[in-house]
Image (cartoon, rainbow, N blue to C red):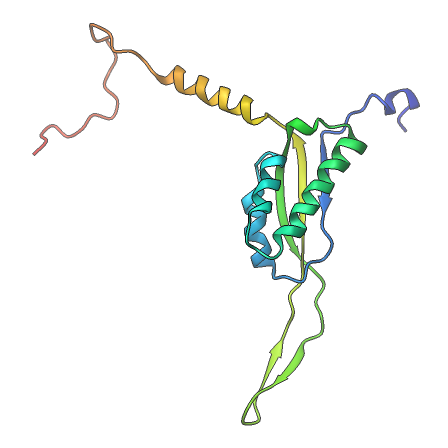
Length: 162
């Protein structure tokens, strides 16, 4: 058992949140899930705001609620939240319905249901990521020296070009 003094000192590292059951196929919902995985939470909400998919409005509301819960209950920084993981599970199945067709045939209708889960973590803000990427690119640039150093040529081409 954790002493009461240490309970307040423990800080949550992530926040998991899931939607209710959608009446949508898990394949369709997975497209939205993969679109927001790894993105900052504000960017993911913006993506869902301008998405033309029917489920995007519910996903947007779920992301906003998850962000608010992470800030309120887990004391995470709202500016640094990212959607670190996002996945879709199949929901409960309804009984199959028989659909009569012409010439004494029939089809079976199964209405798909699914639910989406996200994990929010604190990560780098967009500005920090851009600064790190710029620093990495500048580090790779090497100015042309007057004389060639004694370094072997990497990935030499063919001896004859024609």
